[in-house]
Image (tube, rainbow, N blue to C red; front, side, top):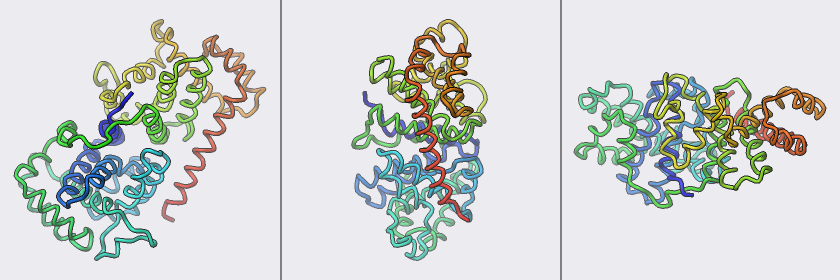
Length: 390
């Protein structure tokens, strides 16, 4: 099974921009501008690719609404710990780890060349391009889209004034090169997410496996839990326990991966609380946003059936497994001993009989999965806390 890489990251970027209307299109438009600047600056195809992918996730370290809204001021006076946190999150996903330093340093000012290095480490050129693209998008978002063509001279002057202090001079030249092309400003007037995606040509190695998507979903689960009341380990543990139960039942490996991914994402709608109503085909806005991703329809239908009591929903084995994963994770957040676990399991009717039997016979492994998930998330939180400014 092959899943489109750009489409996946673009959909995720759109979801994490849903937490506030002011963030609408920020990731995808910044990525689009950065990709255009990278081309204008004669980056290699590999550099252009990394610039685009990192641009789609550059603010992924903004773990709450305040952290996401602060960088929308052009002066950029905040501490930008979200950039360091984003780098840490991407480093935890093998497929995305090559992008981690780009995101980590994407708020680095050029500062007359002093920004080329930080603490003895060279700042990636892609970081400087994304910083410029990010500031351009902040200026664009600050103007009425209908008046962008009238505002372009003011925006250009602001960018030019940042030359050598904020931005690397070569990339100011790339800005002039791209934005003097006929139609470049008109394209940025669009408020349609798909207009930016379709402008980006397909790139080398543009497909990922379901394993890769599962790993990205585990990272997104950390965002989801930041907007819920269940604790930072909740979605990670739910996914891993659900995947374990599926494997114990002898379900096909591909389906087990999808169930585990469903556990990571089952609370996805927490990220679209600011958007009322349903999306396509009755999906919540967040799930509708993921719908272009191959195979997500099954996962979405299982997760949205978790709260339903109708016969059709209950009859689906994947839904029963996910319900068991959610229940067990919630239970383990309140108890610490096997005796308590058995007592509570004996009293519940929440878990289907075939799954209750597996839980009874595999309780030690299940409790270990939960404890490992807690430790993993605590280590991540500790690393993030060390990154935050004092």
